[in-house]
Image (cartoon, rainbow, N blue to C red):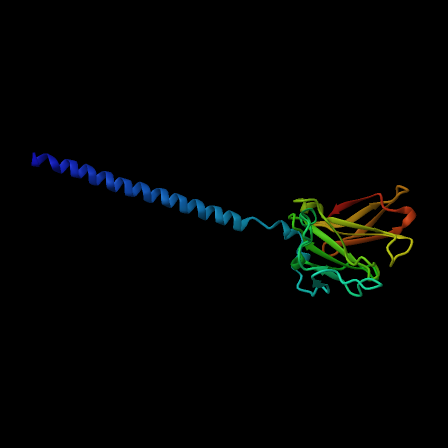
Length: 213
């Protein structure tokens, strides 16, 4: 009987070794899969790569505060809330204060900024130094960062009788074409992801179209 035990032990050892090799193979596969997944994520460009203006290191010029400071004549300098609004609907698509960066729009007396939004989009912020409500902003639809964002200010205090439109668009957009009420069009160049267009109130913009490089 003793002579029959050796084959059983050999089979058990073989099974043990085979099991260890199989386990090692599975672990290696999992590690390789995780590594491949991490590498793929690392190689996936950020959707904000199309907005290099967000990488600016220039001071924004905006004071981040608990709430807008309003005096009898409105704020004397651009301010913006440092925290999201408490209302869930408002906070769902709101500029992220820490991401606000200045952009140039070339309209005298008008300051503009770009920011990431809480809805994974992009926002444009505008201040003319006169509006009592402080900085105005508009954000792209949720998740549609490729759309950019546009804010229209009809009868802006700093531009009486005019309509001001300010926007941000992704890289690769050379100009924005504005169609006016009479059917005519005007082209506005894009600089640093930003553009601005001013027209007479009676010729208010009907639509805008981005034009690629």
